[in-house]
Image (cartoon, rainbow, N blue to C red; front, side, top):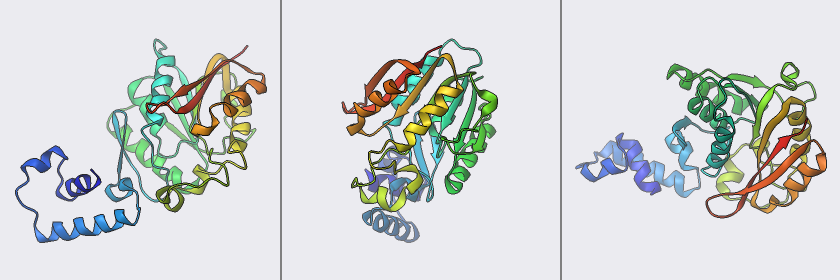
Length: 262
């Protein structure tokens, strides 16, 4: 599949379009071979094509930004279900990266007021780039803010007004072994979350509790080994109820949700 996608990228064709491709000239063959060699060295496919599909969107990605995963699409879908029927909901995406969650929400729920927060100077350039592309395509513009999701002063003007806070935070334990594509190419600020992977989440919970209106929702992605520890952390905070964990399409624990109590 990767080889077909790379060849399609070189020729400007879809995978299906390769069926009718009758020739690959020498220049295209050289470019294709070079890309295959890079992929064999575990450079992410999305970095080589410059694109990552996410729900209904195709996002620009490359060095310096976390490549969005298909598993995160389920979290976006959960948010959109919570927003159904709300005319102008307020949504905050903490740790936005490429903007996958924030932009999908803005695209699929026009009228939502979405703020994307990212602290990594390299990653936020991709957030801004994708936000500009989607705005040019007619989607509701995002507010893209440089900031730390654990900062007590973050978005103070939104305290108690937010309908949904969503996050795919750094959650990888410091001693975890990760695939070479991740270790060599995903930005460290998007990955590592302390000894148990939950250090950033602890600060995130304080911020989310402050931002959310009573009855607002929180959704946090986590590692498949954190399907019990992260919900327990949310319950221990004391500011949330209806804490639940959700599995991905492979049946692995993937994200935790909770309702902000009044």
